Length: 316
Image (cartoon, rainbow, N blue to C red; front, side):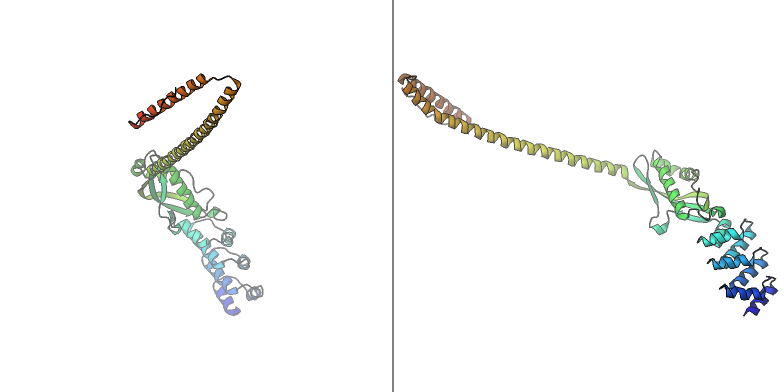
């Protein structure tokens, strides 16, 4: 086993001794992976130290992928050393894919169809909703790949820029007439700051008209105002009914007081007779006045009902 690996390395001028291969096995390093990676690097004339390959393997990295990324970067003229490539790989990023994206830029859809949304919705100042779809061309920035934000951040920032640009437009017609203004404005914001990518271009793929949000909001506000007015009117009606009942109760109370007062009149007359303050002629005069008052009441009631008889008499 070790002899075959050593022979492959020797014939490829990889310079790995058989004792080194045995030491790898003792250190729980897969010698086959190291030899394959070393041979690929030597054949591509990319300087890689065998100890670095072993250390990266022990750290849980993908040795073959790192070497392939170094070869691809060397062929494309991209400055990338083993230390940086290993750091990118250990950070959980696909370093080979990063190099390929750096050479061949990729296109990102905004919004991401995987999120369930196909268009970015925003409302212009005239209340009309505008639906836009953008395609962002990005290139990997190797220097910011470790610790830089991912594609999701690019999508979120571009979506925010589209919403802001549409929202600042006076009319939805301005957006439809010049959709390139959206891409120019968003691209000028420097949305790739702090991300692992460099934005090359932002293209508006599609612009559609959505709902009339302004009219809907006005209708909702009018309905709310109507309900408030109805509630206030109902409140006033309830207060009027309560006031009416209070007045009726007040009338009944006053009538009761009148009845009580009238009940005291005969007692007062009797007391006046006993004390000599009221004579018989005065009493008859009082009865005549009471009869006249009763007659007037009956006449008034007859006039209100449209007719009727007159009852009453005078005592002399």
